[in-house]
Length: 165
Image (cartoon, rainbow, N blue to C red; front, side, top):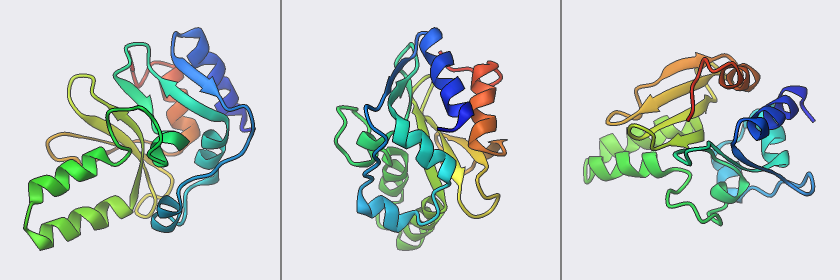
């Protein structure tokens, strides 16, 4: 297992997060996710293979894990909820809906939050490959880079440079 992921799991447990490790190292992501996001970074696949659930103490921010991607979690939000909200806003504007879908094809959401408004963190799969970006309502597709890699992102969380409640 990735050392930084193991370090993060220990840190999250010590800091009141609701984090559950998977009993095995199997990963069965829905085929629609794999076909849409062909180049999911190995470090994130490693994370998904060991972390079953990861929720902040206030339960308003959570990592999207295997169950969310497979639509088998009890979460009120789907893994692509913010994409769906953007598509709903675009309604019958086919050019806009196409642009939204294309944008989300290049950004894999990994964290969702409803703390102080809707926001997310995603892995950039094309422009700045493997970088972690943050987007928030109302323009979810306007993002800012917060980390170069998943490991750096986890480090920023553990150092409270990125603060989750």
